[in-house]
Image (cartoon, rainbow, N blue to C red; front, side, top):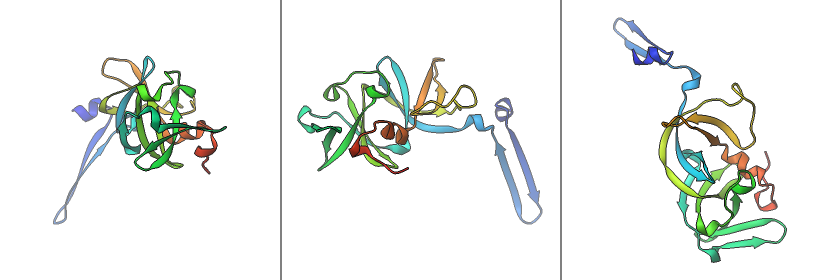
Length: 171
């Protein structure tokens, strides 16, 4: 009943002597993913968990400027490009006062700066293109438990949108 209420269906197929196959079909609009809710300014965004390696609060001395090409952050013996999401999404610009999320993208590892981590959750993916239009840096949207809408970040595209030499990536 619950699956049918979602617009899906359950099918049973039996073959004597071989077994039974149970198929559950759900509409594509009900794709579910695990994500991390993050606060960026006054808004909540979702970062897919499959891209997250770790999160940490950086020390001021670990954040360095690279002449003409932005900032990097020193994490566990390597310098990672620092993608300040305020350049794509308005927010604060003080990495040592926020949280860095180390992500793995098509372009390699990078550090995304967010204001706060709000928690891990499963979200239902809603396409933006079929309901609105393509939005740079956003792969989809979801409706939160309180009825608000949160955008799901396309982490690889967000890194590419930073457009800095340390972040250069062949697509």
